[in-house]
Every structure is written in C-alpha cells, then in structure tokens.
Length: 78
Image 1 (cartoon, rainbow, N blue to C red):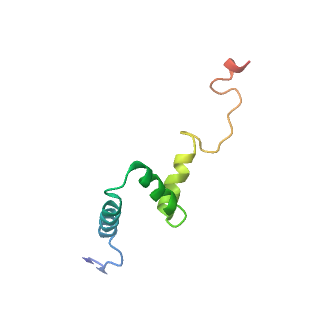
Image 2: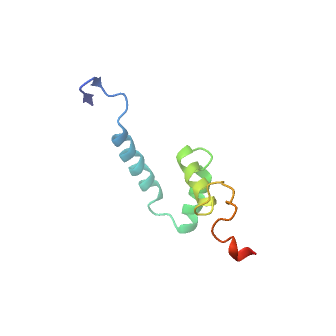
Image 3: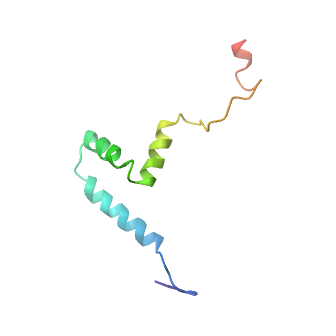
C-alpha cells in the first residue's frame, strides 16, 4: 500500500482483519467450555489476550489506588 511518503511498512487495518478472520474461523464451532479453554491456553503467548485477561481479573473500577480518607462511604463506616 502506498502513502504520500512512500510504501507503508505496516497495514494495521489489513492485519486486524486477517487476525479477526483467522480467530473467528478457529473458534467458530467451539462450545462455551472449549472457548474458555482456548482463551486460557493462549493467554501467556498472546500479549493482547493477556491484557484482556488482566482486565477481566481486576474488579471494575479498580485502578490499584488506595481509598481517599473521608471519601465516599466514609460516614457509613463509623
């Protein structure tokens, strides 16, 4: 693919579509249990899936920050 500056080194859209198509074909006929196992087996090898797993394992809204003193809910705990 050509750009104004010359030849493109990496086509993100093409890569994304080919990756999506490859994964879709691979998991098309899997059961729920097979899908879970498929994701777990690939977590260590795929950085993108590893990030998704890390997000899934963290509670919603948890960013590793300590609670603020006197913040929301402080009056309820006394």
